[in-house]
Length: 288
Image (cartoon, rainbow, N blue to C red; front, side, top):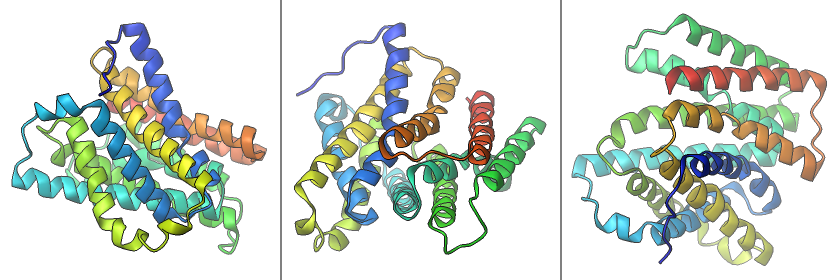
């Protein structure tokens, strides 16, 4: 059984950057895997669950089981996570990593608007700025208004992924309250496995051996390792610092896509992406 090493403040900070990098690699693995989004999400949930259970086995045995109400809410948030991953990897397949990542990076704007609508929380002036920057950035990033264009469709799917992630974040405010975060992550991933298994069974035998390797790395690195580093680092690092570091996730994803796949964004797309990422930083600092 693996054990999580004790962290110092410096190693926790490094761990957060590695965790953000791992999350940013999700789109890269989605591009490398030739299987469809459904099999990618199933594989990510499967190997992510196994890695989390392996690292935190002794820790999980000490945790109380969620109540029936908590379990129902965790299953609901697991369905949202499933939809978020499906739309994100569909965006990667239809468009490319850059537009999918930038579309997903719109989630702070959706979070601000949905918090005001669902929780009747007052939207501050700075939060209106975040929404405006994201909207302008998305317009600048949009390659064209031709919806038959793959990049435009990819951006739309990525933006829908951002909306679903915002809903997931708000659902987690309720569903994971009083529940250990690692236990909550396991419940959500197991929900995905149960839901997608009947649909994935017929396609699993056709998955290439190389794709299985990418799926293992996607689940272990981008779910197990990234989540573990995030949770462990929060014991020593302020939530505000962690939020700002994780706002770098789109930067890492786009940089690796440019390096590995030659996805060189245009100047207009770079300017729009910069606005979206800047808005993400502002939102992270204000809501941490």
